[in-house]
Length: 214
Ligand code: FES
Ligand code: FES
Image (cartoon, rainbow, N blue to C red):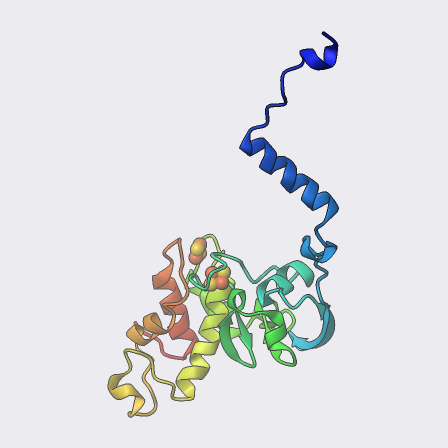
């Protein structure tokens, strides 16, 4: 009996057959287009005015405004807390209105004026809201503070413009709106302070609004 005759018949399980068929099929017959394509990010031209300086930038349309500010422009005063629109640490002003910069793509703000905490002061002269936060101990670790300050600056403009909040009596029919402590708390409720410096924050906003309390 020769060697050929002494070998047992080839035993192939169903599983082995399928595996071999798939591998050989991929190698031989599957068109290249069906394989994972190379993804090249599209770059778009945008123009922003950031802290009073015009900036012409080429950006990936997938980048958030927060990441543009922090990672690309190194404006790290704006903080990333939750990155989900829940803490307010990333609050900046866009055309004077406060927004969570983690919730908007930078490209959506193309052409707009953006103010971050770095742009509030006039040179060495702090913004009155910044001064008030310092005077009233409106912070401890300071992580939430840039967002708190930007939010508070916009808050005063919103009240001045007569925009009511959930606690405004008669939904703002009575003008001017009185900026009570309840109003301040309600309007600042989108900015979380893990250190719990809320008393100082309310006092600072009250002070900056020109309303002192003994
Ligand atoms: S980081 Fe944007 S809301 Fe928290
Ligand atoms: S001061 Fe620490 S989180 Fe607000």
